[in-house]
Image (cartoon, rainbow, N blue to C red; front, side, top):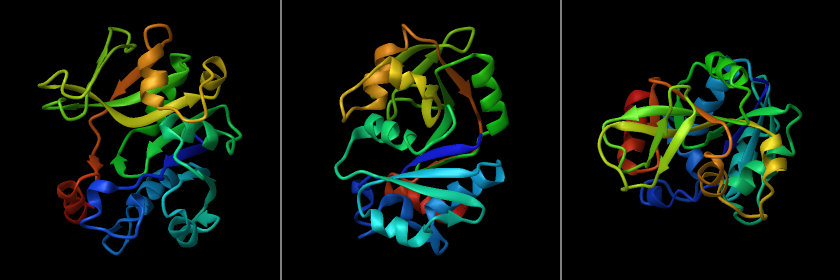
Length: 229
């Protein structure tokens, strides 16, 4: 895994009462941006190039990181207007050289065995692989189900299903051919227009991980970051 994309363009609406005038991935945790913890994990795994997909207050990110973070080379795929998750990923992929690229959210830490995930993706010869995690109640997130071969067999909307189950952990391995095969408009949702539209037709796979998970999208979980990281 030489290259990764981090989606770092969100507005962080639910955190505005806690952090102001900062994009969500720049929220300070122990006096440094949350994004640095994600980059540290990627660097430790041998990643060499990270594309930061930016939008809202993008200059705050660019001024802090510049072109490098340690040994990581940093590029910026800056959106002039919101493109949705799908448009953002597709645009960021134009900055990547490799055919398979890791995609992560800039407001989430999920400590995954990267080598195991890459091996899983390649063994399945998948266009898309997703890291899943088990939670006690899937209602807040929506639910994902797998068949016996770890192929995704169901995506359920938020609040459509409750109770224990698997959720999308927000980490993907994407083969660039996926976007060539299924062209989309400039702005689109990766989750709605790709994953949920084509999982029955394509072999999209899910790998379950029980690694440490933290999403700072709401103030309560952002407070957890101060205690746990």
